[in-house]
Image 1 (tube, each protein chain N blue to C red):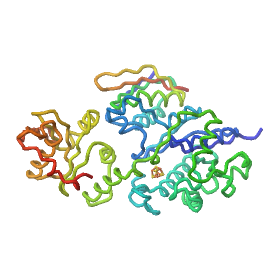
Image 2: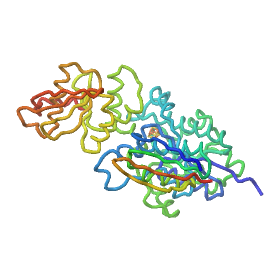
Image 3: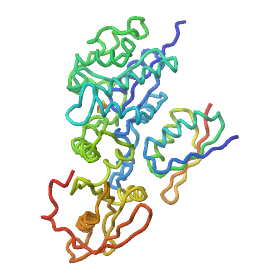
Image 4: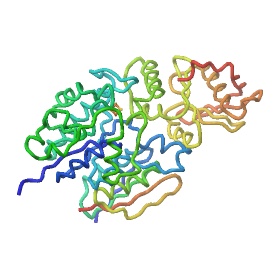
Length: 75
Length: 347
Ligand code: SF4
């Protein structure tokens, strides 16, 4: 399993979603992506984007005004 | 068995595009959504910035629509390419800085490129004849189809019966009889359809899908172009126009004053790019200075910053002036009086 991190700090929605989408395109099913953001809107938008496109959110956390989402790329 | 046809629907997050996509899905066509991010979209952004909007978590309506429809959504960053649409609109602007007709042509053209690359058959939009005076009049519909290069691959299911036949209808990929003939500004037919499909809680944006239809936002954009002497912008400029109070006491600089904590936090992220000010003797907002203020201008800016602090009635307040490199100094100033704050400074 391959894991990558995406720095989406300072971007406002929907840009973190767009960057996530573009990164996921380069990954394979089963790979994991950790997205680090500062816009709290991602806590809604990235999980919604994952549900629509068949990816799985493994973890969401927030600390010190940062929001971190780990997702697993679907088939 | 005949091949299942595939269509891409332009999804704005509003009701019309949702109904248009649903109408075609009902006919057995495989539909996926596409949404273009120009940098001016109402979705996200200021809602994410301003504290007061946090009580109701803000959803992204395009994602919400796609989820309700059970379709994939492709969000495309068109920030760079959109500049040419906004800066040089062939068909001009609407009532504010909204180049709606050129914008539609641009988006349908992008969708056309997308269907070619992704082996889809046609394009769907939620346009309704007569809904918006400039870009959705009956005479403008063929302009969008033609100038975008989509021609008869562009289907508008909500008003298709009032328009010439398109390829999906001619080829029998969709049944024209099951499409609609909605015209005008009344929202009743759409609301009835929404009810029939069981859609509720859909978004009803008041002024359209982007900030360019907003009078105040447009004024700030025009001011930006005038002050820099050219019609150009970067994404950060566009973002900053959405945030704070913008005050231009002189042609060479303006102040961006945070209106509340959320905006202050957002503007804080730009301290490395701008001179910033804040009051240290009293509570007050963070202020960014855009432009090239002289030493004298800094003094005026500090007095304005003081005016927005809780020390506005004090004889003297301390204002910290921070440079982008982090170096700081403190100015002691007398806050500007209410009558000294000229109305025309407010952009
Ligand atoms: S309102 Fe904005 S996004 Fe919508 S068509 Fe007009 S310019 Fe384009």
